[in-house]
Length: 103
Length: 239
Image (cartoon, rainbow over all chains, first blue to last red; front, top):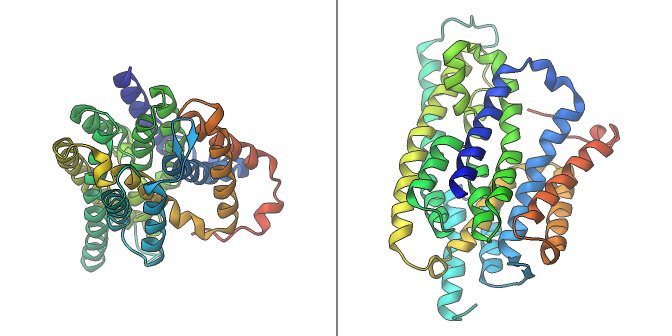
């Protein structure tokens, strides 16, 4: 099932790219297409941040991940590169769990 | 620069584009290591992790897929989220096609390289030749390094034991935020982001893992369809 999802979504993502370079570019001139295409990544990424950090199964929780996210915000405000942001978030959560086991 | 013929490119300009593209390509490729580690922490095997980087090859979709898997969501939810995020590459392709002027098998092969970074390094160029150099240099560098470092991260991630000890679960939230961050410069996007996050958290207690993110995506679709052109007047000018 996982393999089916991996290959299905993978090939699907490739076909989305191929469609882009193959379709006539006037599709872009449709304002609705452009607006929706702009909004979807923003909404999905924001939802992914929220769910990854504050959800535990079907429960909402605040734990070391929230501190990791706060540290990531600080790193981004300081214009840190992607890898540094990710490392800062992980290190913050790891340190807190070392100090307060079970958090 | 805008007047340059599309067939040739001054050596100095070519070198400068290649240098910039390699810089972006190396920086992006390196963070494949974080994807590899996060993916095996989410429960995927090394082979599955590498297959994602090779076939899907679009970072945000890959992180989304393993993120849903990590939270116990059905593989179908992960696949749908990945595909929805992948739709922006269609938009990039539409913008790139007239610049790159690719046909036949070249277009079929180049399509896999249509991602955030290769698009950013080519759509701003003044000529088709310059756009092609930026696109191919960035795309091929990211492709080679992203796949190599995915493998490195996946193997390392398998060796370190419980991923929570190293805060790898917190790393995923940080990665999504870093991908979202540049888009938050637009005030309308900030509103959409806050609404989407609130909607997703609101449905967490009542739906299966993976579904809240899809619901938030649906809200964005609705917002796009329902907000009339009035919102476009306040829109920031595009690149």
